[in-house]
Image (cartoon, rainbow, N blue to C red):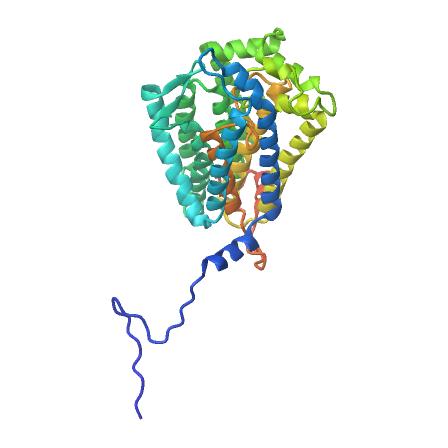
Length: 415
């Protein structure tokens, strides 16, 4: 009676009759649909739909303002361009959301390294627009800082997660050094608003990483010192802050934005019936929230604020029981970047914050900025994907926050 020989692995050979499990494209999409946070996806798509209507309302004002004696832009010029960019952005978002967490981490790290390199080149070969050198033109213009935002959060989260292998690694010093480099490069443009946003993401990540509450006060004091130095060293920042605290004039951008926002009352004047928007600079980008207030009313503005809050709360809810430190920190950093940028823009339009030249994510018109925001959202969707049939048995965000109150991290050590 013959006895079958055991299989010995060799190069180029596979065991006989070995079952192979291949996932089809349809199967992968089913898995994606099962694991994706559909509530978060709906909120994001709803915000983008509002953005499409908002750009349609703001497009005539910007088209008239940017038209010249030689070139007359159609009223819906920016609307149709926005629709095209949104279509590309949706493809990028859905493609990024299908990535595994490991691949999302790799994409974020490579993106951060690449954009840091381009950010270093901005002072040398960058293009100046409206008094700030922020763009690089390589056949198509883009802002490295916009694409650095999602990569920055993922890079910092990855570095902090090293402490799970070696609690003694100086991860706080490393990410603080990276933050210092980014801040220096951003202020060379200059871009104070972007620097504050990067600083906010860095602060949230180190806070969740287990930094002692006593050191939080020290960092806050250092931030105030740097902000004070910025006031004295940068004329642009000083003029905007002086204008904000001095009340401004009827011709200041922030004052015009606030007047436009309130002109429509609770229900708005109606689509394309706004008048004040025609004198508003950057109506389709920085001050689109004011255009929404004039044409669609303060109720719709309140709805937008609620949707942003819902996005932030939904992500934090998903992270509460997250057992992977990297995913938890990266998700918190990404939602801080998106939510922080949104609320800075809204506060500027409400004349509650100095002008920062910052767009409203998922709503404002943009080319590279729209792609960058959609990429950030796609990576966020990828990081918050979860198998609904698996239970979490390890400490999550709520446990980490509790431990941070005592100045300790999950392993009882300090970063």
